[in-house]
Structure formats: C-alpha cells, structure tokens
Length: 361
Image (tube, one colour):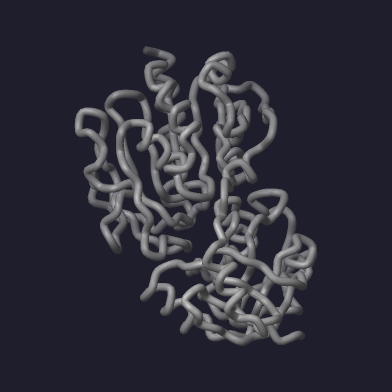
C-alpha cells in the first residue's frame, strides 16, 4: 500500500497508508463511535461531503453486502480507519471494505492513530481535512483545505423525481419528504402498512397537497439546516394544513426552523450507535443511533408552538420536539436504526396512531 497522509486544516499531519480509491480528497473530518454498522455509515446520505473517521480500531471484519445499504451510492468524501480487514468472514458477505471504497470512488487511509485524531477533533472541533499522497506543497494544500465547502449537499442526495413504494391493502398514504433519506425509514413505513411517495427536496407545498397524504415523513439529510431556506418555507406553508408529520434528524431541524426556532453547530457533533437520550415525560433513557453536526437550540422554540420532548444524556441538547400548533413530532436521533436494537422503533407506531386519530377526527 502507498504512503498517504491525513492533513487537518490546523496543519496537523497524520501519516498512514492509502486504501480504497486512489487520488486526493477534501472534506469535513468527523468521527463516529459505532462498533458495527460501517456499511450503513458509509451509505448514509447524511455524510455527504465528510471524511468519516471510525473510532473503533478494526473495520471490515464481516465484509460488505448490498442488503444493508442505506442508499445505492456512498457520498462520503473519505474514510479513515486504524486497521481494515481484507479477509472478512461472514456468510452474508459478498465483498470487502477495500473493494467497496474502490467501487464507490472513496479515498481511504489506514494505519494511523485514530484515537489521537479523535481526541484532537474533540478538543478543537470538527475541521476540514484532506487525504492525499502528496504533501510537497503543504501551503497550497492547506489553503485548499481551509477554502473547502460542502456546498448544497441536500440537492446532491435528494431524489430527482417522485418515487412510489406501495403495499397491499394500504392503511395510509405517506409523503416521504426527501432531504437524503435512509432506506430503512421507507421500509418501516411500508412494514406498517403505508404507501410511500418519496418527494424531492424541491417539492412545493401545493405539490404535496395534491398528493392528499395522510401523513408527511421528514427525512434525515446532510449539511447546515439553516441553508435549506426553500424547504423551511415549504414546511411553514404546510403548517395550516394540519397534516400529521414525523421528522427525523435534518427533518427535525427544518420543522423547528419553520416554527421559529434556531439551530447551531455542535463542536464535534453526535455520531454513533450509543448516544443516550432522555424522555422528559417518562424519565426513561434510550440508547440511540445518531449522525448530526447541528442541533436545535434549547428554548428557542416559542412556548405556544411546542416543547422539547427529549434531550441528549451527555450534553443536554435538544433531541426531540412535540408540537401543539399542529399534529407533529420530531426527533434528532434515528429510530429506524434500532439502536437498542428496538428501543425507539415505537415512534413509527406513534406516527401511525397520529394518522389514525387525524382520520377519525
């Protein structure tokens, strides 16, 4: 394997070895703490434009298979691991992690101290970075790293036209407003008897009304929620329609912005399958899967519109909102990911109950 380097925008250089696709890549360096689920991580559209650092030291031991992908393609900018397994052992495995990276044109680096790298990001916050084999002109490289911007990642990962996933004897028709959805969100809705129409992020409020949905699902997705002004306006326009709504991750943030709340960037985000979340009603704590770099600012939502329903057990940030001005609730974490492994899957059933109640009413 060729010698490769991970260069952070503050000038720190980690030397390792390249794997996956060849070449140079720029992105925002973020770490995720999951011990498993690297396939789901690599195919999660929320990682668009980011260089993923796995804190778990061994990646790839159970191989790769297409069934566990959360999207058809990976849009990650790069991949960083301590060690990768080139001879996986699992009856479901059809490939290995190195081949996956090559197939999806993702530049990777291994054999670096990911513990030291993670501690640096925890201390300094997320920062731009590059994976490269050439550091001969470090000043020019650092300039390009500092000027890197993800751009409009939701436009990249959202579907470009409507997609329909119908079931036999459907109970409800749900619009999945797509900001970069994970496939398991759609699978949950189908499993619970919902026809699902996936709509691009550019879909207007009137176009959604014409579909006569029983409910609206707001998906996860990448980037700064405050940049998605058109989607925020669309959600604001839909509030008077009183359509039952359930939002996850970016969808949670966008609906909060549409209702007058504020969002802010976290120092290093919440990424992994072990994030504790406290239910403020019951006092129960759930272990959840998360992947986000922004949060809704606590107490920024007008009290007459809704209230915080969940908070993060580590830092107290907002993890959920229940609205009183519309039949809607949202969460920052990923209930479709079965973090516990079933812990918060009941939220999809709550969405079904919300639609049932709305129909009866």
